Image 1 (tube, helix red, strand yellow):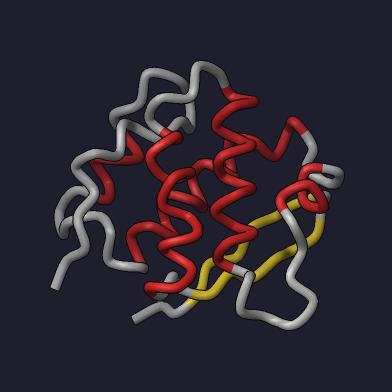
Image 2: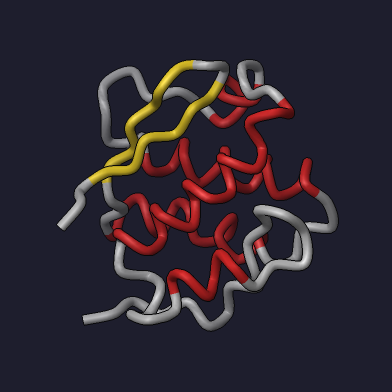
Length: 121
């Protein structure tokens, strides 16, 4: 099983470990925001908050603002895809829904509403 997801931010790879309870608690409000964000900038901000939460247990963890200072608009679509992958490898997307989750979006690369996200056994 995969234990991390690599994001490209500012042209550089950032490896985010699988979410654990501590990081999930920090990320949860922003995970819920993904499905309600009104535009790609809102989705990008929520995604950066999730990444920052995921990195909060690492040495020299960047803040979401630090990441936002580096994120390029042409990286938004890949960011959303990688967030969906992080939620999947962390066990937050029920088996069989990961592909559907990333494929049933109203905006290219956007994340659907998250209320159905439930930790899986």
